Length: 193
Image 1 (cartoon, rainbow, N blue to C red):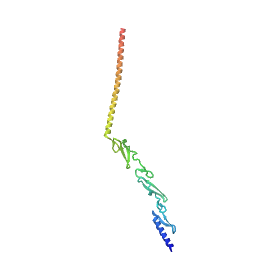
Image 2 (image 1 turned 180 degrees about the horizontal axis):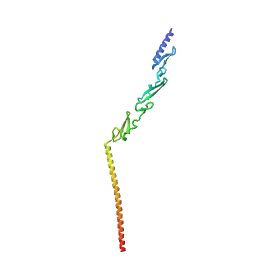
Image 3 (image 1 turned 135 degrees about the vertical axis):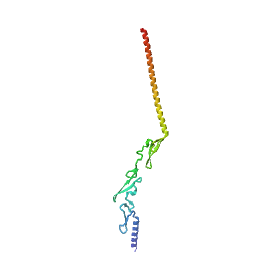
Image 4 (image 1 turned 90 degrees about the vertical axis):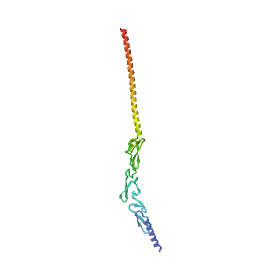
């Protein structure tokens, strides 16, 4: 008398537990009178169909990449990542070097700021690409240019002065030699006459 009640109770309890425990659209199937089993959908596995076989549910694509499932067959699932603008790689794990072609006019350093190339200018330079020279630097460059020109003029003048003095010495020596020769000639003429 208790046996049919017990079997009915166990079956009801097993069926209710099985239905409650089969997740992800798994179906509760009776294996025999006392044993029930979850039959999982083709893309789920586990005792209670709790494990997904779909690779995109694990979010494998990094940096906001879009996961696209590729289904070859129910047992052969794979995925592909569609990366956002500044990322690449199988999992969108690599970032494109945004500063690769930015020189900042050779007057600054490029930095990646929120996926945009931004120039951090050196002292005395400014502008979006560090292309503007400050008035202070322009003054310094002018002073250097004028000083360089003056230094060259002074050097040239000094060289001309040295050369002139050497030429003057040479002329003085020749004059002395010419006087000596003239004096000797005059003395020789006195002796001859």
